[in-house]
Amino acid sequence: MLRKLIAGLLLIALLPIALITGVIIRLKHPGPMFFKQLREGRHGRFFLIWKLRTMVVNADIVLARLIENNQLLATEWRDYGGLKNDPRIAGAAARLARRLSIDEIPQLINIINGDMAFVGPRPLEKYLAESLPPNTRATRNSVKPGLTGLWQIGPRSNVSIRQMQHYDKLYISKKSFCLDAYILLKTIGVVVKKTGI
Image 1 (cartoon, rainbow, N blue to C red):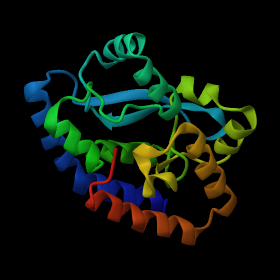
Image 2 (spheres, rainbow, N blue to C red; image 1 turned 90 degrees about the vertical axis):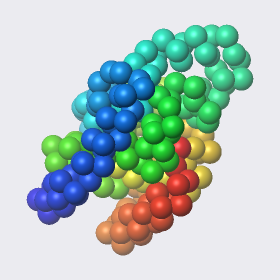
Image 3 (cartoon, rainbow, N blue to C red; image 1 turned 180 degrees about the horizontal axis):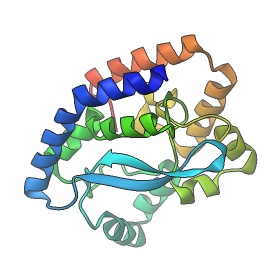
Image 4 (tube, rainbow, N blue to C red; image 1 turned 180 degrees about the vertical axis):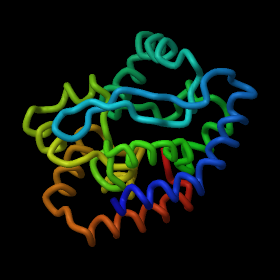
């Protein structure tokens, strides 16, 4: 109950920032302001995650063309689940939103709905969750996914899928109130220093 109350207060305080950023992005790249995607949660239950849209509308088509014609990008996508210099990002405002994690603000709705926690393994897309070893997937699904996590206070975009699994297992094995508080405090530092993806 306290977690939902805190998430609600944060949403009220931070949503205007997300909305202003969303309007700026839409001026140059028309389309929906928010982006919803199916992600895997606790006990393997899938839910719709909320994010501020920071990519072009046809991002999936652009990605398919990129990895089809460039083996290096295809390998980067397979190993990291993302591209370091992603051409799908919708301009400078969207890039800044990702660096400052403004695009993550709408996920406070997911916390209010009970799908996510403040700290935990990041919720994965269906195809990526299904690609994990069964034991790893089961371990991740034993807790709620989080808005931030252990790997996000480290290298973040430089962490491979394999390294992410290590961070997630470590977090779950050491999970405690003190660890969660530490990760939340470190996350603030990471956002302020703009070391996001």
